[in-house]
Image 1 (cartoon, rainbow, N blue to C red):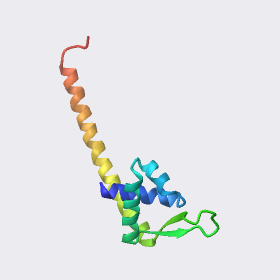
Image 2: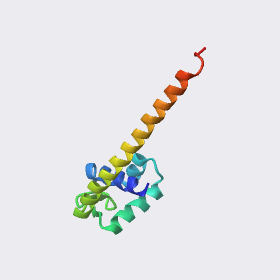
Image 3: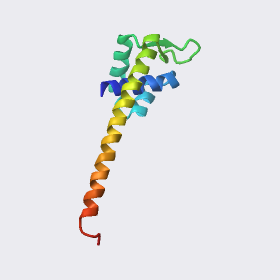
Length: 110
């Protein structure tokens, strides 16, 4: 699950580097504290860097930029995320087929 969160954060910030932590938390559906924790972890890994907006009136505003390591990590995480989702999809297809067979073998619907 950590990889999925990292992937989602890196993807969101690659598309919108000016997102605030509050906006990021809302987009991820997590608390502000968790978003801050995840951002710090990605900054510590060297996958992101935070730059102040130079021309901003709000001097606490940051621009989150993916580093070359972050871009590589995002690509690797995307491949793993896709594999995991494909496996989930296949499991769902099998379960749906099993349920259809079960319903077909049961008594007729009311």
